Length: 562
Ligand code: DON
Image 1 (cartoon, helix red, strand yellow):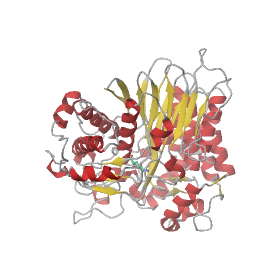
Image 2 (spheres, protein in one colour):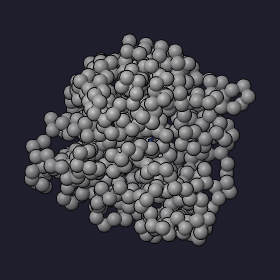
Image 3 (cartoon, protein in one colour):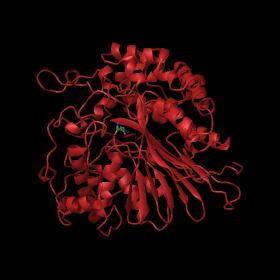
Image 4 (cartoon, helix red, strand yellow):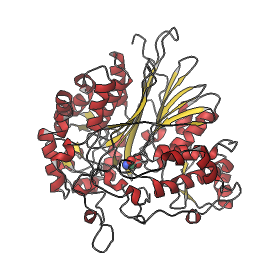
């Protein structure tokens, strides 16, 4: 890239520049622009450096994801999973690289449910039974081999350097480590790496992860075998099993990142491309937008409009609980659920004047504080990546596999252990999302592209079940707006509903006084959340001018995470 780098948006604060819009010196003339938004300035810088060296958006995504694995260890990493939504400009090829964790072959129901039929406390969130087989390393290799132009030795170099030489942790790290200080203290492997002398560090402390640096280096040199075979794989299995898990080397050797068709649909003239199963997020987004399409929506924060969104979300999340699971294991009627005809039927009971009651919706599921990161990239050629990656809850399972620096996820909590037992995000689900060997747990992660006559928006967010309402609000705001102010879009106030519990959560601040009362008059139970949620990262390119914007959620800098 020959253009000079220009910072179009410095979101959050002057000290905390996460998102970069990279503009060439001369606009137009066959040149378009590039933009990256991520949750950490070092990750954005690594992606920018790769674009500067002539790498494409896919190369940049590998750099961004791998640096996030080092600098946001509480959010995502080699020990976790996620989804990479890709758009290749050359031929319009779009695909979702599914790097979701899998349940190990040795899982058994009795690891999670006691002889009394009650779920075993902590089995899906702590220790070896909580961790699924990681997918991120396989995805990095897959994306590099299929879509990248640079070797992993180049795209992973920044991550290796930040892990080996260390980086000064920021306020956010300090706050999140403090939140998990107690549990990290009980996990010697994690405490040694992530705490300073057994205590949560202050901002400015240099976090060095030399073992992680060596593991990433191995991945760069040996490809997937550097992680899924050999000494790293052996250590992962031993460490997990010592913590009560049941992993085998064959679980790692057999892990594959899978290419799945992205979910694509139209909403009021815009084409929305989003995550497919095993994410439930894209389906909920499609169902909600389809149900809302017949209404002429005003500002989505106007209480009358918010009511309609809540009713659509209620129905979409109810269907999630009933029908959705890993489609490699259970039949899921995705086409029917996401069709316009189904939306008309499903949304027919939406009453403009009054809320429905969740327990009164027509079918019941069959019996049977977290963290994540998102980043968005557009390059000069128009290639795009929207990636949402996670180890699930803050610092995942807390298991650091000995000698590898790899912090393992607790993604098993995204399965439904029993239909009446909600998970950490208060999500309920039926047998479709029950634990089974090799199966991928349902996710809410919703990396998304929106294209209309204005341009292209690339977005996503962390936040567990609340990812869906964040993305829904942003898509509606984007489609309605004649002109795009991306910083305003990602900073706008949020609310959420997920069928069960039958509660509308609203972010503190940001809503006019009559918002809550109008919804309550309609019959909604409204709760003000303790803090704001999400950390949306979005980039946008205008069709006509090629001008780009990048924006990071101000909530990220404020320490919000879920
Ligand atoms: O896949 C999911 O839906 C969850 N494991 C995501 C967790 C998450 O977003 C935590 N958030 N900050």
